[in-house]
Image (cartoon, rainbow, N blue to C red; front, side):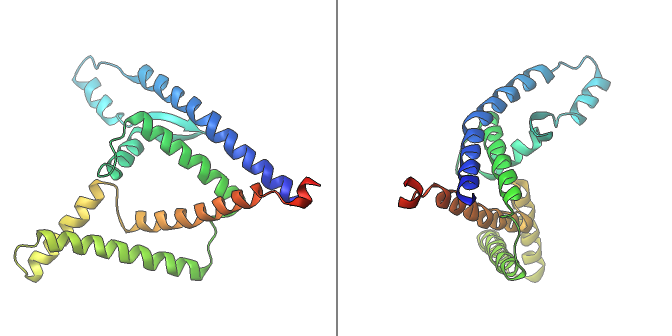
Length: 195
């Protein structure tokens, strides 16, 4: 029974990943085309600017906003050149995987695991701030160091990066590793399964 549940979960994940994501991305393109308007006057322009964070796609009623895509693109901009369509695809993929991870309980961590996750995230964050400060600090006074540290925080925030995103990334990484192991275990066929 446990093997059949795992196999069903594996098949469901594959169906969702291969079938749902492209369909949602196509919907996202359609929604974007339909929501673009040319403002007629200054009042409309102000309202349009306030509503600039439009919904590009939804998954089970959860929207993927234009601002989510911009944050995603900014976060990965140093390594990849992404379009909005690619960002939507990736965000949909993440939401599908996150939904499965949550349903299977792989995102629940012990206190010891959270201590480890928080420590790794804090080390990464401190290293990022220190690297920025080391590169941009021109005079080593307490005031100058504090100002450059704040610049570092603002700089990383502009790319969607913070201590909280470090923690979230490590939590997702651990949960995703559990999910991958679960899928691999479900796909292993033994002699007993064949017989």
